[in-house]
Image (cartoon, rainbow, N blue to C red; front, side):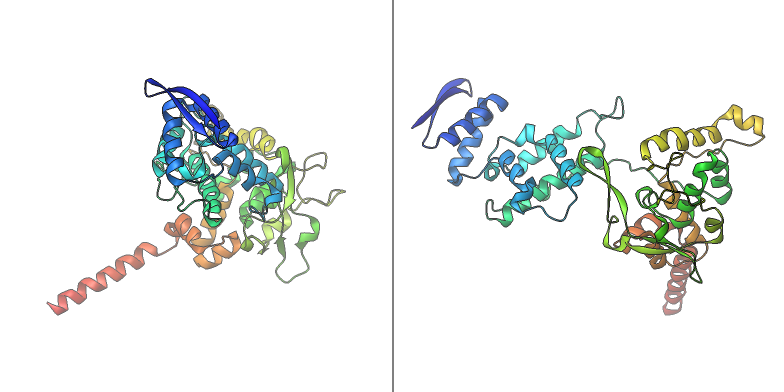
Length: 377
């Protein structure tokens, strides 16, 4: 028999346990959260009469490759999940999984949303980041439910506060050319390729010469791999983001004319010394520098032009590609295929408002209904 004596609700209490493991779990919970919370958890646990693992223990099992629970992901992704659990384990980790309620999850969400951002000084953590934490936590509980360790997933139905998402920036051909003019010569082919193919950074920089086929009637680039975050953050080659990410993209003349000369590197786009391009360095030293220049009032005045008035990021080249296709009359399903979206709903939600004639079609339909009502009257 194991006894644990502690203070709860203003009084000294003693709880007994037949299982030393449960007793030590209770001690850890008292130390981490205090006696009041620990006693509340204990009462709920005894009501369920189970010996379910704590959330921390179950999370370790869930993420362990040997358990066979979480499959089909890259080692780097698994490593990323291991870092993400630090968002909720300090709050909920000591609780047995069958005692965690929806209210507990709600309190964690409220606490998490109030935490300071690690990258934006003076601001709280981004809603998208909280959403990612919540999704992982939900998956962990869903796996426990599948294995009959719990009856319901307590994360289901717990909402997070939606923030203001960043709007995509769409560039005209002239605006893209202005930014391109500030890019060093070595890197211009990469940006021309990205804006005329809609490829993601990880896809474009993983492209090898064997993926380029200029012998076809319509030359193409085969998108069949992408850089993924590996263990300890070191990128490794993996598959594209989704099943439909594997795709063939036609190469317009502008891209073909600006392909770099083939050197010793198998990579089509690479660093000056031939190695793989790193997003962080390129973004900071090359891209942001160029965008800053085209928005600098003094420099623009010297050049006799107005500041661009837009601050696109590299991913906005993908948005720009889609906007150019839609402006030329390409159907949304074609844009979906070329972007490699798994679901057309993604394409519609991001680019549907750019479809040419959409407003005119709506007005024409509504006007037709109005005339019909007049006739019936």
